[in-house]
Length: 448
Image (cartoon, rainbow, N blue to C red; front, side):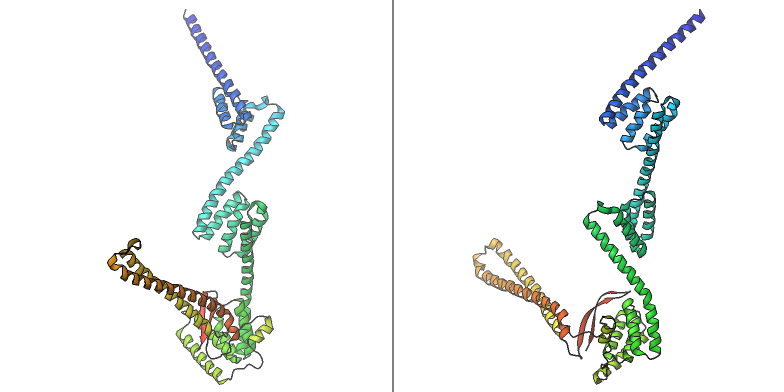
């Protein structure tokens, strides 16, 4: 009797389990069919849902092929790789040889794509960090981030920023190499504006490299000039020192240039070399040196007044032009009318500002008393007189502004034209560019 009961229980359990498995199998089949249908229609999200459901009810290795295809279509290559791995492992020898070969080939491609996807994500993170460091002017750290990004994913789009960073670090040769690579690989994938900007940056970098090369030659010419100066070869020394200064505008060269020009009896140019030395070296030269240079300027100015300056052999600007096709005259030209006309222009504009302010202030007062132009009868006559004055002030404003604008424009024109007609050697004032390794701007140089 006991044996019968046990047998009955086992039979009932087996029957129940079989029914449950049969039910799960039916659900799995339904979800699998739906998943395949949605996959063929390109509805990958729904396909993924139904195929995952099918596999949860029945872990059939055959489902894994379609699950892998779905993940691949959704660009989730890591999950696609896992699905194909499981497909090959669980299917084993049951998978036909042709399909197994196909699956292995797809798996290799998916693994490569998955690896690239991970690399691209890491590269993008390094790129964003590099951009932020570049904005903070932390160029060395930015360069490291960009190099890491490019190592992970050699994307030509990274190269433009890499070039800018190398340029900021003054690694001009590396920057040129990177910019050339960027322009070559980007092709027609960038706008003409962006391409033009990159080409301009490349040209500037190549110019800077040339300047760097010239700068390296400057000390050689300077040493030669110093030797010639000590030997009393003043004209030769002046040429060597001026060439050094052209290659590298180091204000410290100017004192020696002044001495060489003075020895060559080119006094006016020597004076201006000394003056430029004092201007560019302001705050950097000792008081003793400054005093000594001022004494030299005073002595040379006296020689100029006595007419003892040497001009017969054309030494100076003409000699410089004959030597290398460039003028290197330290002597600024007279611009008296420039300053007179410009002063009139500035005064006219200042007058326009003043009369406009006065007129506006008075008009505001009138508007308070006569809102909307309606004045009280008792104030009508007085307000009319005040309005006439305001009208005259506004007319004066227009006249001052017109004269001022014309005069300023004429002054700017005279600034470039007037020196060509200057023959006065006593009083000269000039506004010239100031550009060297330490400063950039404009300076006023003159002789009075």
